[in-house]
Length: 172
Image (tube, rainbow, N blue to C red; front, top):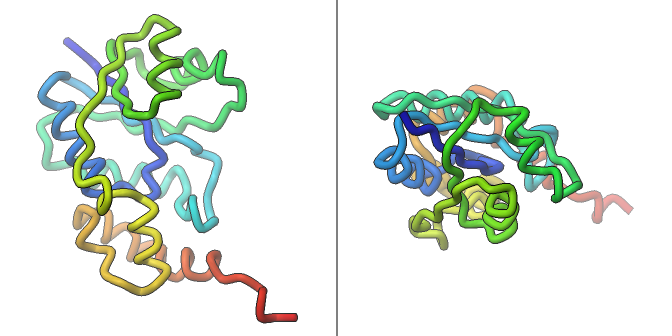
């Protein structure tokens, strides 16, 4: 049995992430999804809590024939011990997947096999684009799995991100 590890902030979990999980599922029997920056929420760049992101991921992946574990990984501002921190918070895994050069390097230096996966329409399927559309009231639902849109609606996520993205520049 092979268990993989894939980390992201998943703010929110979008169709690019889903496509990446589908691709990784071809190689592994189980997948750990590390929810990076787990302690961050209620900001423009990180509007959703770790628990909300766990809901998004869990509901979005129910149709895949893949055992998945979503685990929160809080930030640790010490790169030299980051991999051991991740390993302490996660079920054991055999291979890590990342396209982030720093994450790739850290796993590699720690002796963990690391594989890159192709990005899927990165210009559109990225969290920054999804969040910008949410803030501007544009069509964001086409960029996320239906289950993720349902979670965001359930938690009033659009109202939250629009509210926290407001500035007080006109108040003075």
